Image 1 (cartoon, rainbow, N blue to C red):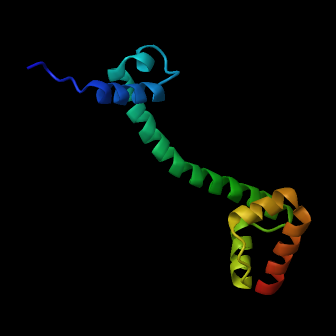
Image 2 (image 1 turned 30 degrees about the vertical axis):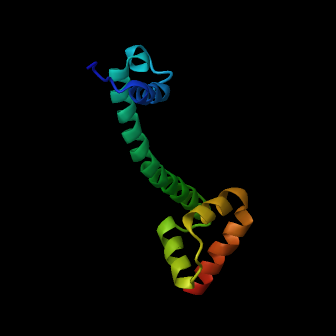
Image 3 (image 1 turned 180 degrees about the vertical axis):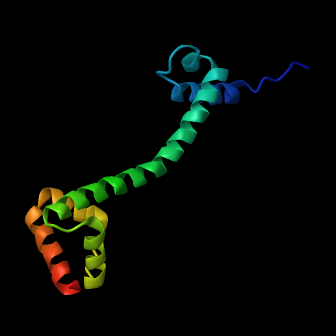
Length: 118
């Protein structure tokens, strides 16, 4: 009885990995064994960096809010504390967007928070 080599299913699986490895340099892009290893590493990096990206954006928003708050003479932590005491529930993304695109609105929100919390 002839040996079964899994035929089309194995070829399809290998081609799928090689498709993911398209554009990689040298053996990594066209040799299945190397390509599989490289693609698996790439997937783990993708997974990790999807989570890291959220922290990166949060850090960016905090930097923007802090810069805008300092122009009003208040630090980031004092502003966030005042917003919490005043019951103003704007998240950091929205505050950073206001600080960049509409400084007058950011100023109004910050002054209202300072007035209520003081």
